[in-house]
Image (spheres, rainbow, N blue to C red):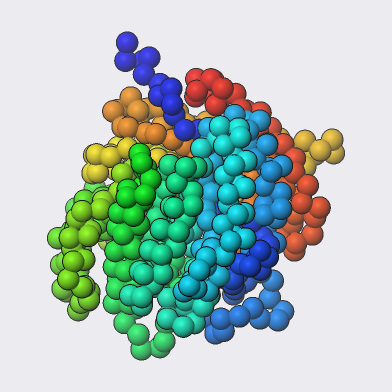
Length: 478
Ligand code: BG6
């Protein structure tokens, strides 16, 4: 009997993209420049994303992968038709804030930008593909950084609120699923990317990061409020870069450390989902002289407007240790590196592969929040080879996804309420961390290399046909 529990009939199978990594057309249609548009590819990228930003313009001699990306801006019809062919029930995209408010603080929205997303959503709905929309996936109008200093300035809450009310009014009949900030916890790790923060030498970095986080959390609550006022039946989610931390050994110090590492990330979701600052965060602030400036009414807003579901990305689990010797043995991961787990293999970029970790992460999040979960990113970044006959045999990707979908099934059997799955970069796009094209996640290959050469032609990989069957059988045929 229990074995008959599979994916719910209305399960949202799909794929995920972000405007800054796929659209290109970075100054077309009235769009303004964003922080991501000045993140170069190559060795300077990380420095910039971390907040060491010399100039808020593009610099001669650098290349900027977001400027053309995969030209989804002009090719979205063709691409959505391919997603429809795979049977997508939903597509996660993001709206670029600077297409709607080019400077962020403009009096009126840019009609051309609004129209562009109207057309994109209409194209999805034509095939019964539900849009799942991230309101801010890393891209912040540069003017808001230049003139206000990014999210450290409380004024950004008003600009964001205006932006969200504008898009909710405009798309209220087209979009039901929203997420306020992509991987909100990334702000701690890549402050320029996540919050438009630039540091000066003597800055108290933690204070600046957590004050900016407070502003985003209030903005998220206000967006949730607005969405519920404007859109009937709306579902507003938060979005966490997830992946549970295992203690490196059963030494209680390692267990304590793993809990602390997790709490750094859960902090955001605890506020967005439970509606208040958790005790462990207050202690951390006290002990580190971090005094968050709040305004009257802030706590009530956080309490009243909590999210409806928990969106998260999962690429791998993490591992934590309190032992200084062990801490040196790091492996790469989704931006923040972790202690190497000797039981796991890794991708070509060093991200450790752990499908069981997805089941554990789902259970942990569901136990903690008791709200529906939506896996809005997961996948394997890998180098693909185009064979002589033009085919791309990406069995490694199929294997990765198959094992993770099996883990999702187990989580559902465990009692987790899971509403959807949108593997990352369902069509190849620019890598957020490295700016590369050769780190590919897609079911659809895009002819473009790291240097920007290529025809941008689209090509179905083996995984395209495999995923089509997965969706058709509602996860039964893997
Ligand atoms: C997440 C982001 O961090 O991981 C995406 O939300 C990103 O924007 C994805 O692309 C995969 O990371 P990367 O660095 O391989 O592109």
